Image 1 (cartoon, helix red, strand yellow):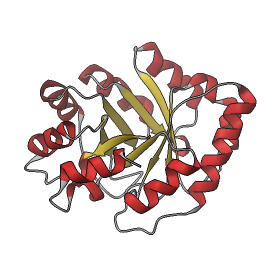
Image 2: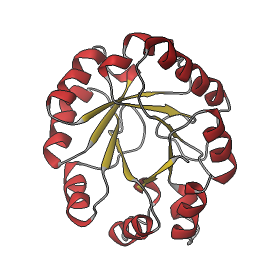
Image 3: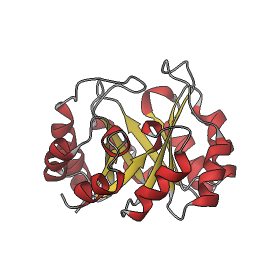
Image 4: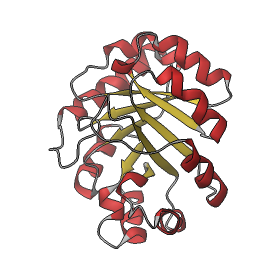
Length: 215
């Protein structure tokens, strides 16, 4: 059974507290916060204050996914705000090992995100520095994209690399996750399903979380 991370980007932004509480009641395991800078991606989203507020009202771990340039500049802000996990995109950081160490040094789980245009072979050299992996099945920052089925092969290859290195971290998948794709993702080896639109945009938050949890 995979865990479910509820992505608040798809919430009604005037009702984030209410809707995240509904996801928590239904058994969501984490809250996923996409931080976008309008540069690395076209969208512009949240700052550290929201993370601090979510920690105040929710008992769930808060996973911050930095889809931005210069993640080394912003990671300390979200660490101070109380993030439980901080993930940055591999292609946005020239010195990923250093940043992973810095995040871990702050007592926070350090994660790496890999976009759909990039392979996972580099994980052989990075797994022992990280605690969390996000494989993206859509390009960062853009809504309404087609689900990239190549993520299934990446999931299987990431599992193989973990077997080869003897280092295992949870694998999350972000983008286009719903009941149908979620079932196949779990079969391919996903540990965590990050879902936003499927959970928050149809008025059935608790039922949608339960369906994903049951996969």
